[in-house]
Image (cartoon, rainbow, N blue to C red; front, side):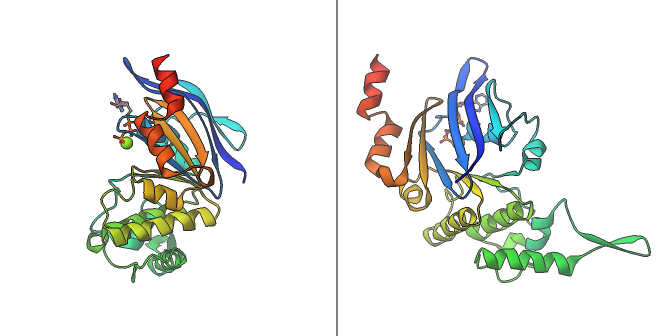
Length: 254
Ligand SMILES: Nc1ncnc2c1ncn2[C@@H]1O[C@H](COP(=O)(O)OP(=O)(O)OP(=O)(O)O)[C@@H](O)[C@H]1O
Ligand SMILES: [Mg+2]
């Protein structure tokens, strides 16, 4: 699996607070990478650096071999990075299809007047939804009538429609019921199977062990552990998160 993005020595300070300190991480296509860590460990800050919402104070991001400097989320989007935050930023009154195409609607000119290609956009969205097996019956329905899991599916569709190469999800299932969580986790796997790189931030260890190929643990702004899922277990990961892992105690009391 090839690296899509390399983070090298990423640091981020907010005044006197060091939110990130020397984080190295490789993000690969076709792989789900889970970021775990206690509250305030730096996960969301790291995601915001990847998505252009924050500029790092040190270190660099390298995409497909070339260093990049993001000044805005638009810069990251143009580099193929789509971020789905927990507050999804969907428009309640618009349909599923309109949300997927928001800001990049397809138009056709008739006698010089632009018309929205509604039918074509709906067909495209229907195809994406079916591919994701998202259980949304009709892309013409308003998002206001969708459940939490269906909304996540709309946000994922939007990312796919933007041809995202990296999809980042910060706590996508935190507010969802069990059945809805199952569907979103299936969507996460599908994204990776399509060849996307996926970064998943979660506090739910069992969700992480179900979908992630690799797990990175953040603690106090540092990446303190990284494991392939197959070579670790929930107990070890919890010990890293809480700081109880023997390898950490030696370092923290030193
Ligand atoms: N905009 C900001 N200004 C100042 N400090 C910030 C800002 N954003 C984050 N921080 C600080 O940076 C540290 C890391 O926060 P971050 O939100 O990245 O943690 P997290 O791992 O996402 O936690 P959680 O699991 O609670 O979401 C915390 O100490 C936080 O208070
Ligand atoms: Mg967070």
